[in-house]
Image 1 (cartoon, rainbow, N blue to C red):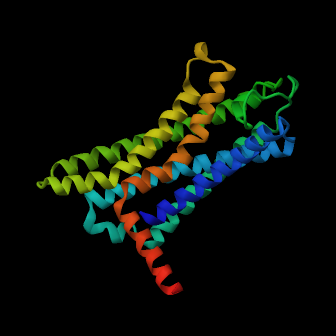
Image 2: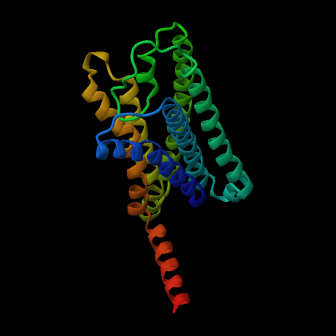
Image 3: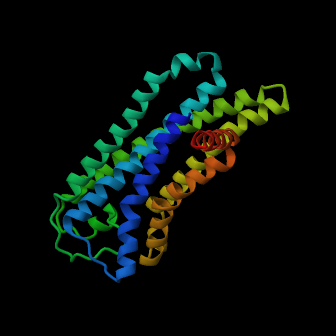
Length: 255
């Protein structure tokens, strides 16, 4: 679990680093410009980190499923090599997805100005500037990505149905509480990630406006990666104790 949490932290850090520094700099210097190459890089890296994070959250639901439903097989099913392969698959899937979308989006012809009503380069906003029918390819790619994301969502739901069934069969209340407490941080992170992302991409056009689009994009691009570490650190007492021991050990060695 801690290996996957390390990967999740790196993805959250990368996601925030892709959008916030440029947005903050623009705000401080009252500047709204970004180069064409800079915009392409922002799309590539943001999609990479977001896609990889959702893949990793799916893998983490499997980790929780094995830990609670098949604890005796945990070491076999999720050994060091298996964890590394799963994490590599999440990062690789994220990179491939972002590369396809970025290459396809920036191969389009743009003729409707160069102003994006957003604080970072976002594909739906960029597609509004396209004047070629080739944008339908990107719409097709987006539909494929949504289908894959929906498949991951179904996998997470099925995993948690199995987890809750197993937890409810635990006879002691303390045992049930301990099992639930290991799942709640992950469930909270997944819920936040999916709810903000779904609303951002599937909100009705009738309520769409530049200001609402800005707020919604902030919610799904900034809030989940910023809040994830807080959720895990608050809920996970074991993590607190481990950090405390590390700090005490470092202080003791220093003296």
